[in-house]
Length: 60
Image 1 (cartoon, helix red, strand yellow):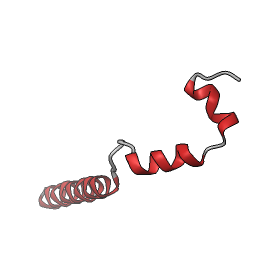
Image 2 (cartoon, one colour; image 1 turned 45 degrees about the horizontal axis):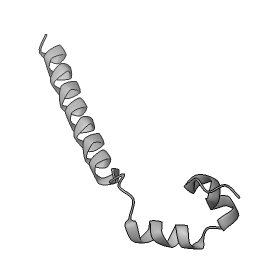
Image 3 (tube, helix red, strand yellow; image 1 turned 135 degrees about the vertical axis):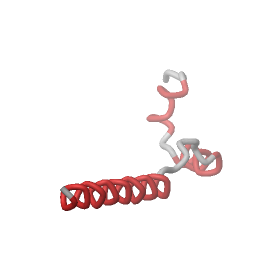
């Protein structure tokens, strides 16, 4: 019976550590979904106008 309890405790500890590592990796890798205004401005300025017109609502 002692071996079963020991294995259970070790299994629970391994699970908690794995959850902690997973949460830590997720929080480090998650980035904001907000666009960078400067990069967006540069992208729009460098975009070909014939492809940008339908997106802006300007039809040729």
